[in-house]
Length: 178
Image (cartoon, rainbow, N blue to C red):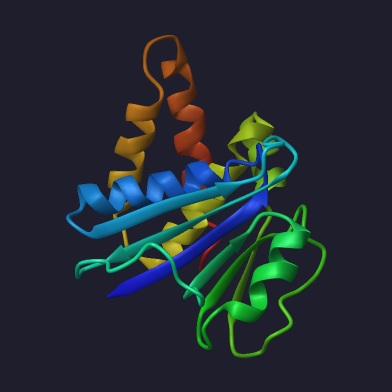
């Protein structure tokens, strides 16, 4: 098993956090992982993406040309990376931000209303956790409990109050996949 994932969006959308969570959860479950962030100097509002590799074998390089999956949090990300996804791969689209549809017919497309669900659970900032939930539910690569433990570890002290909100967003994202 080897998954090469690109997560891309605007800075501030939480794409790098999705990647970091996937890598840390993969490591916790005994997988070989890499996480390589890439962002412009402008950060929030500029383009940010990361490459994640999850594998049951050693990872030779964190760099790859053709991902098995793409998580597109904004329109430019879908436009830029869709063509490179391997045939048979999957594209997860934040359909509250991205109005285009996946053009290729050899890819599985999942349209997740991240912002809508995040607002329903009470905070627009958890839309990335919605997408993470959808990804975990569809791929079945990682155990949901592992991700929920990661979320608990991310928010401690005064920020511990954000744990239930993020877990609810994660679970609602999982429910998007049937």
